[in-house]
Structures are given as structure tokens and as C-alpha cells.
Image (tube, rainbow, N blue to C red; front, top):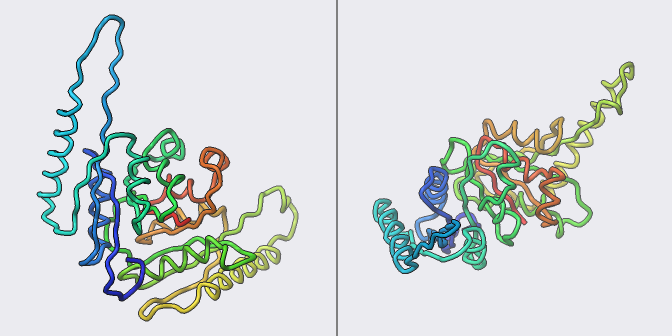
Length: 288
């Protein structure tokens, strides 16, 4: 599904439950999928935890599994979309999505939290983002339309073959229906580096130019731009997360690349991907 103007089919795995964010994730996946794509609608269920001092509660596992399948079948039936394939799995939702998505082209999850903490504390979205080797889209914000305007956060690189930014930009090129792609490199100068009386204007302009050259370098390394797509390199002032969050106010999709460093430490230290996924006003694609 990542090859533009191709007849080959792809597979999208979408995590669903009874929440509104899951409905949004499925809506987004159906919107971006091609007519021949396969959309695996996955619902994971677990045995409910029951605690008490002297009380024993019998749990009918078969009944829970049957109700899960029934609910998922009803959801797929209401959607009336032949591309949908219902799948239920017992166990942790995040692990089930990562396992199901190993051979897929894309995993889609919903998230409506308004802070990095909400993304960090055991959420399905957090688990999938930090454990999947496949591209992951975190659907958030109010837009579920097919992405025509995409913003890609880019950074400098030594080897284009090992650059998350180059991969992210190439992935954006492959989206069906995309018309405009902005490659944005943000730079941030701590206030103490400038000082109260330092004539900052010339330095800031120079840094803008340097940031623009980095964005242009990534665009060049990404290779040929598909027909019908306009690409623009841009420099932005601020941290990477802040710049992408601001850009998400008008974009249909924000795309970031990541190297797959440790999940917990990466979130605590404030990675661009985590900050963007936690605060973006539009869906966010995270590309390994």
C-alpha cells in the first residue's frame, strides 16, 4: 500500500475496542486504504482481574471470547466494507497488535490523551509505537480525512540509507492521494545562549538558513518526487516537537522517523516522536 499508483494490495492492522478513539482509528484506516487493501480489525480481550478478601468469582472464558467475537462481528457488519477482516486475540492489546502487524504494511491505533504522561502509562498506543518494527499511525485530533497535506519532521544525517528522516519522507511520498509534503527541520536556541544584550538577529538568520539547508538535503536524499506531489523544504524555530505540533494545526498528517531507542527512557527524555504523538492536532505517523 506504500507504493503510489500501484495495483498491488497491502495490509493495515487496526486496533479496536468500544472507545471513540478506536472508531476514529478505523475510520482513518478505511479512508486511506486502497480498494484492494486488506484491513485487519483486531480486538484483543483479557480475563478481567477480580480481587477480594474472601470472595471467589467464576469467570467463563469461553463466554468472554464469544462476546468479543460477537461484538467485533457486529462492528464489521455495520461498516459494510468488504476490505475488513475481523480478528480477536486473547491477551494484551498492544502485544496482539504488534504480533498481528509483523507482516502488515501499517498499524493504526487511536489515542485522545492530552499529555505525554497519558501516552506513557501503559496505553496501547505507547506500546505499539515503541515495539513495532512497522510504521504506526496514532490517530488523534478531529481529522480522519485522507491526507492530502503532510508535514514530515526531518533531521540531519550522515548516511542517507540509515536516516529515519529520509525513510519518513519516502514513506510520505507513497501515501495514496497526497498532494503536498512539507519537510520541516526545527532548531532551538536556549535563551541563555543568546543573552540579554547579544545582537541575535544575524545569528538567528544564519541558523534559519542552516536549518533550511538540512531540510533541503533530506529532500534531495529522498529521491524522485512522485508526479502530482509538491514538496517544500522549510526551517522552523523551536524544538522539533513544538514545531510539528504547531504544523499539525493545518496538516492532515504529521510524519516523524525514529531510531527505536529504549521505550521508557525515550519518553521520559522527551523524544520528538513521543511529544508529537501526545499533543498533535492531527494523526501522527511514526516510521522506524
